[in-house]
Image (tube, rainbow, N blue to C red; front, side, top):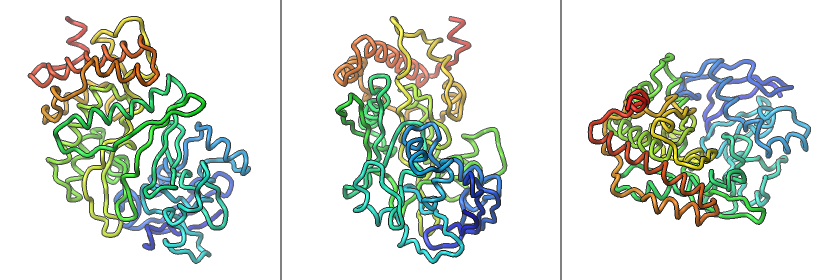
Length: 383
């Protein structure tokens, strides 16, 4: 451990120093090619590095750290040179002679047949930088990298939710990009959600927290995201429509996890030019996956749900929607189709009915919203 050159492919982005015990960033001197759209200071780099590592709560990383006698996920990330499947940043020891071609994860796919790829002198683990709370890993054995997410609790519903969100997006006539998921059951009654990578060697993902964090702190996260995208060359109208679609579809499926790492932009990895908003992805924490009641929830109970997204409550997001027609409700799956989807996928019929009834309530609220009615908890409690 010690001093490293931060690289973006073969472009020098500055230097960082890591603690040899924890793997945390101690010092950083980053130039205009670094993270946060070229506006990274020490505090931002500390956050960037921590968020890049696998959450310590995941069972896979716990096993890896124990077997390899490594203390922290950030130290494991450093041993894997900070490599990621979603962008082309990496760290190079100052005394090493390595090029991007030497470390590019996609060049090692024939070596990674194991569920958790091994790490040695000629191979790096593509999962060392894979964030999020669900157990997940990259399958590099096919022509394209495939992300595999595991779900065992709640009848595997978090994985099923990814597939249902795909069905919802597929139903829409609009052109907002989204990630397409499919599912597979396991021998031990788990459910896997799988999707192809939406990045490549030439196109990388920049999460919204970097976009927003590239400028002075602003409490209006949505406004900041749209404004920075505009400053960096994207169409304000396109970004606004993208966010409106995401807010509306998240509301319909009750996605409580649309935080600043779960959406963002795509960038040309060679020129640095922003290309477009990233496709909509990661809808596992939705459709009341961890909830159940004998009767469907009331409208006010539904609106009381708190989220970990950019708004604490869903109604705050609706209030910021400009293009209310970004979702065509006439094309959405029906309540009956929702109940049948979950019941046929292994969710108990009572739970499937609970999900479907709440989903219908959400559709009703969006219909009212699109026809000029405000949707707020205050108004619902006053009914």
